[in-house]
Image 1: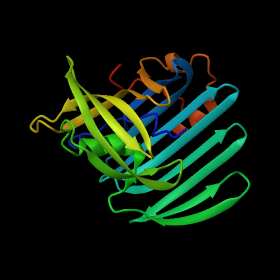
Image 2: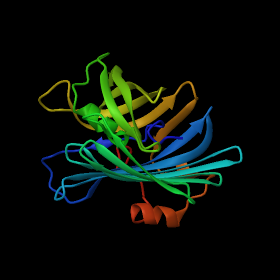
Image 3: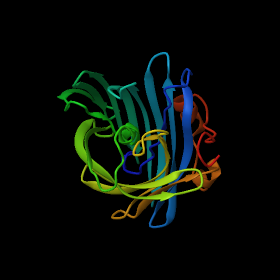
Image 4: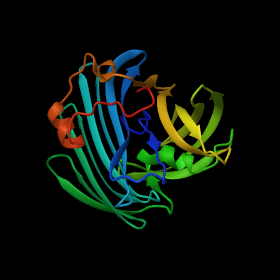
Length: 261
């Protein structure tokens, strides 16, 4: 269940601000399958002005029938969104997987474990490849024109591999405090739709300085996410591993650094 597929992606970056590892977004997403509430995800982004480094931290937990799936990801990129490193872990039932990745230019070094065996891999990635966790920001770097495709190479963190993808703006709608943008995306042969709340650049009509993902959907898989105001709206009926979240996020996220709050 790739984190990128359910679209828990958001970024708010203003280079004029001065801060150190300030949280720019933190939110809880309710996940549904065929309309049934199956779990939740938590997403946080921050930027360290001093280190010129972006961090994306995410956690996902869903239950489908008797199967419980849990994922966590901590990813790092520089201020130009060149990949630096990431750590990914997942547990599907009793099956474990972890990937520890480091990047040097266009070379990706991986350590992949199933909890029993460790293997190492080295891959060359296409120039300009970025971590898929930061896809929305990469879209913000481009003029978001209707029906104009943005082709990209992104790292699917859960696979430890890069894939070609394509995204474009399908429609826009003006709201009182933001512009609603509907983006169609194809990545890893999967198609999904993201609905963003965007704030336009003050002087460039087709550029944006802020975007929050309000929700996503995968029509084929009938899988959807929705940004919610209160954590309990996402976690109700599902266990919350406070120790795991504290280790990953440095404390249990409150999920208030977003548009809804």
